[in-house]
Image (cartoon, rainbow, N blue to C red; front, side, top):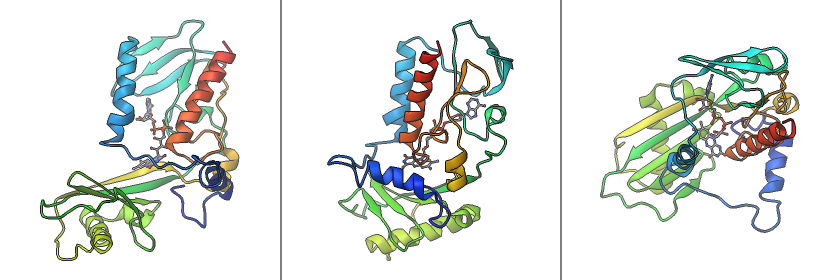
Length: 254
Ligand SMILES: Cc1cc2nc3c(=O)[nH]c(=O)nc-3n(C[C@H](O)[C@H](O)[C@H](O)COP(=O)(O)OP(=O)(O)OC[C@H]3O[C@@H](n4cnc5c(N)ncnc54)[C@H](O)[C@@H]3O)c2cc1C
């Protein structure tokens, strides 16, 4: 949920539990990318788009959408694209992107919630534990992942930790890792801290109630993203589902 338990929407957590722990056999299966999420999702998607001869534009955010009943032009930072009459636009940017805001209900102003990650490069003499994924109870870190000679700790919705300087964060996380694997004799190894302040929206009951669907005030513009109304918490699964829904709605209105 990436939201503190006293704030998190029980309905959204319930929806996730129904599809996982309470689902028929096979509903709960943890997937951990072999190397990285980039290699698992992003690179194959880019390859596919390239094969389809669909250009991908980097470093040129969408800054405006022109049109009244229908969108007729997309304004990017470095260029603009005129839309053909049958074109559809799927807007898959986050809810706080200025270009998305005009399409949102005025009362829907989700607050961001952070995720902090610490990646530590282990010296050769440390033997990695057999398990690649460990959940912690009572630690500051929530999950510890190990692969190759790396150990990574993840902390969700810890607004206080996200404000600390990186060396302090590294100290806190390394202490949890040491305790978890009984590595107390090993000093903190080379590391990198990544603080994503807007990892997901804070998913409280208001968020669950107000998140918008895919249709917008422009008949050929559709919203997608984990934050749209998929009835699931903001996760990769919600993002994927929202994409299918936006595509389906676009086809239905074609
Ligand atoms: C550190 C971290 C760990 C996470 N761990 C998990 C996990 O273990 N499991 C899980 O299910 N989920 C996890 N999540 C959440 C998951 O990443 C999101 O649910 C998912 O990426 C949402 O996908 P999305 O397509 O809705 O949005 P995003 O992935 O945020 O994509 C939106 C894209 O829009 C782009 N953009 C923004 N503004 C503009 C603009 N004006 N024009 C064009 N493009 C724009 C952004 O650059 C971004 O690439 C994690 C998130 C973070 C940050």
